Length: 560
DNA sequence: CTAGGGTTAG
Image 1 (cartoon, helix red, strand yellow):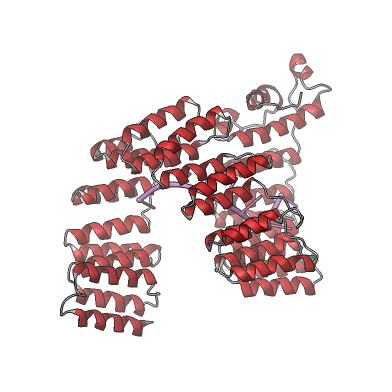
Image 2: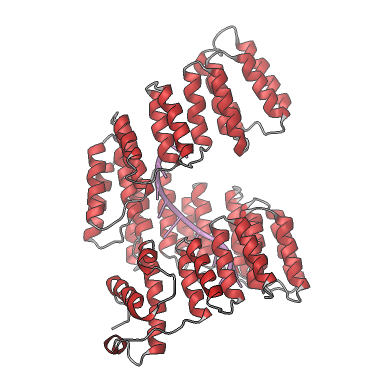
């Protein structure tokens, strides 16, 4: 029998660890593993297995004889830290690091690297830098892997490429050479920022440094071409990768296929799939999920479901993501009923069903104004042992609002049945705005901030919209100005211009546009779009005042 | 210990 044939056993073994084998001081297992998902628990189980194999001759005998606690090694600590990092719990990672320190463990570079990486992924950049400095001041010399985490932070997250390059130079000063991983990380960041030309510059530098390129180096570039709409270039790069001695693999083709979906080149995808074997790669579940998602978003639900057959024929089984794509597809073509049915059948078919699948169907039901069905599904999922998350609750709040039960929705939030977030509050505010209850909107806006929830651009859109509807333009402008604390958002500006024009405030509109341009912000197309929409709605384009429209449009062109 | 791929809410 394989060690962990089922998750129940994995959970059981965790309890065993808790009781006998793994008494790391200060580590509250019961609390910690509650937050972990099944796959993380399985990972934990591996750690347990490792322990058992080293401490006991047979897996179970140790329980019978009553295993004695033994001290873990930094390596094992690191495995645990990685599990917490993967679960998105950097605080637990830091706590373990602290424990090691206090138990006079010799902290090594990999342990620090794991901790720094978990902070970077959680976007806690200042802390990541602090831990890195801490590592250096404790006398440890960071290796290429540790520095690569910093490269990732500066390149992929902060888009501070000069700093990323400084880290690479620093690696060289330490007497190491940046490897393919370090360079590929820099390339990935540049590509995400749309700076493909510079990414190719790095590629050339790698060739100059005789650093071997691999698939991971090229794939981000293919992706960047796809998202720029340069699909031909993407295809050409994939074809030419072979000549560079680096065959594109499933991931590369998945990226390309996603790009082809975006531009609707579905026949090309069919061809690529047909030729896959001869080209030396195998489509996987993700390949089909991407393709099906593309077909669904293109409105071709039937063809998407045909792919389901195709993948099953190849022995590929849909997972919860695949299922979700299909559920979402059904919800968007007015077949929520079928989505509900499919969700029910998935459990019979033993497909993986998770909270996201329930959220998708509940959201579909919410849009079809079936609030009782939403609540029924909430009950169903909880009965099945699937925990609702913040998305689930927000959908429930939304469906209460749609049913006109705004006060009930507010009550649920206030009762703290769950922790509301900015989306939850914004939905409720939106609905209070639509029924004209300005006082309640303002109250909620203040309340969410007391709760430590920061309003975002959508929230400000609601505020601006709400005050414009009531003719309180100066208040709307005040909220627009507050939104600037988090940087200029063209969407909020667009909403304000829309409201101002609908209210006939042409002078204010002009002043606003002039001011935006004067501050050096881009007059985004969404501002133009909402301006033109507002003019048409207002009827300016039909009457004598068309010259005002022309005047404003001329002005705008000059701003450009 | 470090790099590339798919899904859900306003």
